[in-house]
Length: 330
Ligand SMILES: NC(=O)c1ccc[n+]([C@@H]2O[C@H](COP(=O)([O-])OP(=O)(O)OC[C@H]3O[C@@H](n4cnc5c(N)ncnc54)[C@H](O)[C@@H]3O)[C@@H](O)[C@H]2O)c1
Image 1 (tube, rainbow, N blue to C red):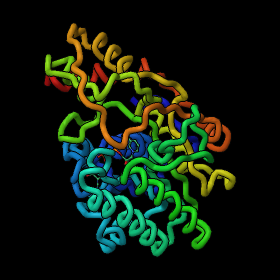
Image 2 (image 1 turned 180 degrees about the vertical axis):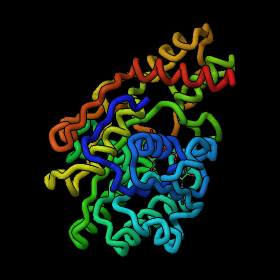
Image 3 (image 1 turned 45 degrees about the horizontal axis):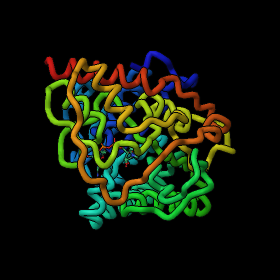
Image 4 (image 1 turned 120 degrees about the vertical axis):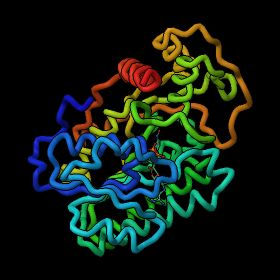
């Protein structure tokens, strides 16, 4: 992966803090920045939902540093920000159903953690701060595709925490003169996403089920649609935002998707075929707090950040299933 460089700047003088770097998206960002010679890639992670194995290949890299710390603790954030040029904030407690079951924990990590990180970055003199929001911010807004300035009522505590990040970013951008860019990710998938735990994302679960002959569960009728987005497109967006010199791009939120729309049944079929499985899925109850349909309009990111997603849903799925095949063989 990452055969294409999404930047033209020399990174040998660029130090970036990746929060949540042991997680799925964060560890892919670590891979990119080390591959292209960043001066320093520092991760802060408390391993709540992240994995040491995601960072294992980089532990001995001279430009890599891991801080085992918690963003809900201000002192940890201050330590993490020291000497950094930019913050790439991915740490959060993901999952809509988890936030319905444990809203206090989601709020602690996603809201307090966010404010701590921004405060620490500001104190350390860091201006550039890009962060993960979520397409769940759109809530019950019915129109497709989703455009950034038209949102509805959020449908879960998780979505509210992500929307609050956007509100804080807007305010702190004005107050502190910082350069925020927030990303409404649309169902990201790819290598290093975990099938483990009660709140695992659906794609690694389907892949594991089809490859190992386990049961694959589909919530509801499976006709709910999503703009499933391959991880390399998401990394591209983060890279472009972290390095852009276009002031019109600062203090904005962006959809990060591909602009496609596939049902969960389409998804299951794609994975089943790529895995060479004959197995049918089992349907169960729909989940509370879930959006029915989702699809990104990505014009804003294209215009302001020259975002150009190179990987289609099908290409991403093929790479992902191949990755899980190799992992399960090992
Ligand atoms: N994966 C998706 O489809 C998707 C969609 C929308 C938004 N997002 C957002 O993107 C970001 C990354 O998601 P991901 O899929 O990589 O999730 P992930 O769970 O794999 O990674 C999150 C990482 O943050 C760490 N973390 C959580 N709380 C922390 C804390 N208090 N202190 C330090 N580290 C902490 C976890 O240990 C984990 O390594 C999250 O903010 C998530 O809400 C993801």
